[in-house]
Image 1 (tube, rainbow, N blue to C red):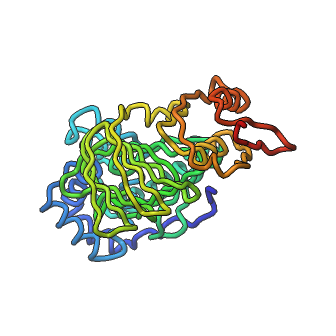
Image 2: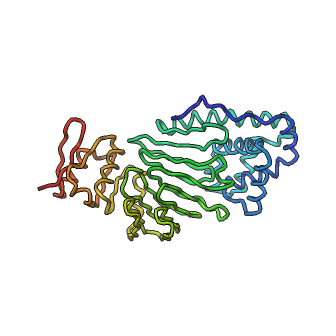
Image 3: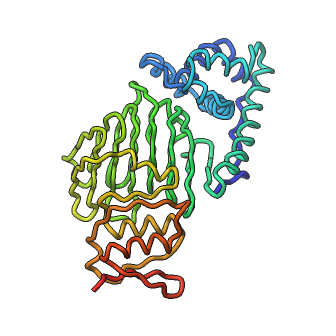
Amino acid sequence: MLNLASPLPALPSRNVLLEMEHNISHIDELILSSLSGDLDSDGMAGLKEWLDASPENRIYLQAIREIWLASGAIEHARRFDKHLACKHFLARASGRRKTARRAVRYVSAAAATLALLLIVSYASYRRGGEQLMSRFADVVIEVPLGARTKMYLPDGTLVWLNAGSRITYSQGFGVSDRNVGLTGEGYFEVTGNAALPFLVKTDELTVSVLGTRFDFSNYPENEEAIVSLIEGKVQVNNLMNVNETQYISPDEKVFLNKKTGRMRILSRKMRPSAEWTSGYLRFDDELLPDIVKTLERSYNVKISIADKSLETARFHSDFSRQEQSIEEILRLLESTEKLTYTVEGKEIILRERK
């Protein structure tokens, strides 16, 4: 959950700020080029060297990044000229900053912006939360059952998180790496950056890309992990079989059986795979146990499968959370004549149709 009581990062000392001041324009340019995804490999190396020089430099980067996020500069950079967006950002955020005293006020404003951003994030994510647990701890964003949320990562990558999902990334995301950890399901529209590949890690699979659109579903309780590619190209590494790597193209889907460690690739029209972001539930040749878990997360209900014969059944189904109740969906599943359902107390029981 969101913790507004967490301490803000300590501000740099006045002496440290004086040392920074002579090089402030060059460092700002490197940081903002990185945030907008426009930093070349030489610039990335220079920025990393500067970050490694002292903890105060990392604090300064965090202050810049929080103001960048709060100012809407990412969306501006995505739509218009990135260099112009950086200039506009610098003008809005800090002016010329000619003295160390103004630099102190600037970083103080960054801390205030961070506090404001946390409050706004609470309203935006509703019950989903963002935790900044300590100065250098990972950022953690969680979504409760029955909900979904939309967010932008510091590099401008768009992410949708489905119900019961969690994503983590480091405070140095977009500078030293673009690695995220995923539990559950996420839809990603990745901002291109040839110098820093985008990596999504789960326990059984990792997905590596440069810039693309894909859906990645890997809930711990599900029997299969699924990667669906909509645009671009991705590399899928099977961590259950270290020698297995697959490259998939648009309209291909990878299924990993988490019991056997085997992967299979299916060719499908993948655009519907991300339509859960708009409230649709589409199941394409998916196992009934995994469909049941999706319905449980989406409607916050309890569903049990009474007959083992149903555990290997697969279904093709399209539903709308906005328009259909859980009872209507169960009746549609029942119409396939493969199963029946009963409601016993607060639990829904699925049985094979005899």
